[in-house]
Image (cartoon, rainbow, N blue to C red; front, side, top):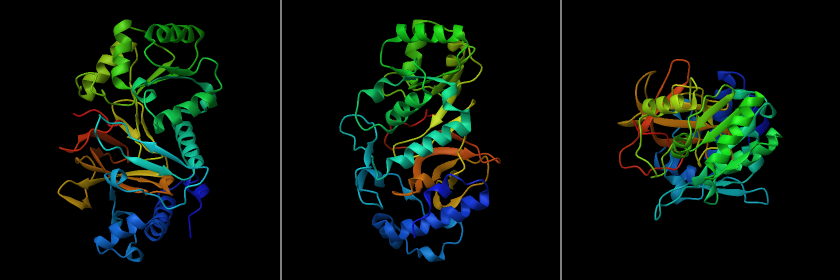
Length: 328
């Protein structure tokens, strides 16, 4: 039986998460042919799995080579595609019910930041706007609309206009979030340094080949100085996920209640590391109920004792994904 998606967004305890995660696993192991074959190849019997740590995680590369979906495509479906350089195989996420994504990102945002209508949302995402199929653009378009603020909107390369808009909003004392791809935020502050009091700066990571990669500490230090803020916020999301984790500074991310990160041993993908040890990031995203909720990413990170996490880079020789965070 398919788990109740509404129950997923009402999770309020680790026990509830564990129970629903196991329920989603059994459903996907039965209904999701690609995942079922993957489990069979590992000689894993789904009914023998009794805790989350025993669940095999599907390598994220499968999103490039297979159509990962449990439900039939219908008029509520959409296909999100990853960014990438010319010739790179794109990941494709077949989202059979986009309303689940909408519920996930809105609830996730409001758990982290409060009512969307309290904010003016400014999106500086030129590399995403210039291609089709971006899940980030879909999310930002909807959040901009839901903010119900006349000044919310997208900006491409019109930096002077954006600076003028930020200054007007600051003068009004308007709470604002400026979310931007990393290189564009750096381009912006090369035009003019700012001294912001009411604006959150949120970077999505990635230079897109436009600039030399920087370690997070250097990047955030530069952005803090040029924007006149104490902390730089970050968003951890990707084409293959329908949920996002947010950092309010220092690169430490927190997941919404229906999302969880585990850190796998880089030498043994079926073993997990304790807090503060670096390994591969595995993500459980229960909002991925119609594709795959258990994904082994190519990101490296470490988990803290309070279940917050950091992203420290990527595995060697893996593709550079559009939403990846900075290599350290």
